[in-house]
Length: 266
Ligand SMILES: Nc1ncnc2c1ncn2[C@@H]1O[C@H](COP(=O)(O)OP(=O)(O)OP(=O)(O)O)[C@@H](O)[C@H]1O
Ligand SMILES: [Mg+2]
Image 1 (tube, rainbow, N blue to C red):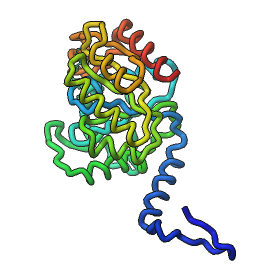
Image 2 (tube, rainbow, N blue to C red; image 1 turned 180 degrees about the vertical axis):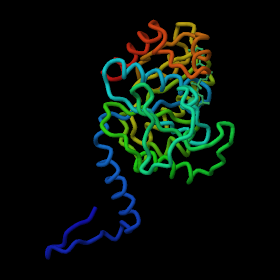
Image 3 (cartoon, helix red, strand yellow; image 1 turned 45 degrees about the horizontal axis):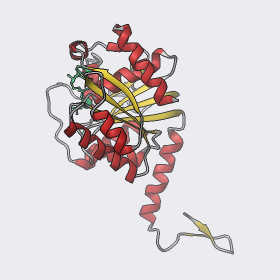
Image 4 (cartoon, protein in one colour; image 1 turned 90 degrees about the vertical axis):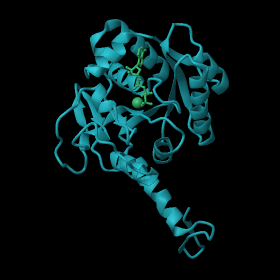
């Protein structure tokens, strides 16, 4: 904090180096810039392959079907799948600031849109991933949104950490499968969020037999509600591989995700 002396001069406290102040100011400026996004929800698990992208996409489209203005950010910078799940292909203009793609009324940004071949690996160290996420937030025209849904990468480092540091999140929706190992890793993400002061909005179990097991474990450890139990259903992978959104195609899946969206959004 900048303090004033009795004579009115501004004084930087000795304990706060100017470079730290600059970082704090940058975060404050970003917060103001993104103030037209009412809610920011991260979809997260430290475990890979549990259904984070599936839940992000279907939750976003469920919210859109409920009449909200929604954005989807692919924070899985080096392994971006969101564009594939949405059938977003083609080349994108070199516009700056970045313009999210409008996919049936949902605004989408993903590194995949800036890579000429979807099979090309993006081999970046942590600082580059952090910089790309900052670009997606600071230099993108999101406009007015009710919800920004952020599809996170697994792990408890680079991308999740950047999102936590840069954004004032409403919280994380945790995702797990029924397996104990998936639950343990999802609890790790919840614990990380808790340590950094981010709320857990609930846990969803995917590829379930209908009785929550992994989600029950996470719910007990994190003291959060099980907000969704999505049964194993081959339609999810079949539709995603075609770039079709299950919530838009299947009324039962839509109802399930709308139920979940209502629980999360209160
Ligand atoms: N309820 C479900 N029933 C059947 N298959 C599902 C279900 N949910 C997700 N899948 C499939 O599981 C696979 C992994 O899902 P997804 O890519 O969403 O996981 P992820 O956590 O985002 O993975 P990553 O950590 O690699 O980003 C996909 O092929 C997806 O279609
Ligand atoms: Mg994913």
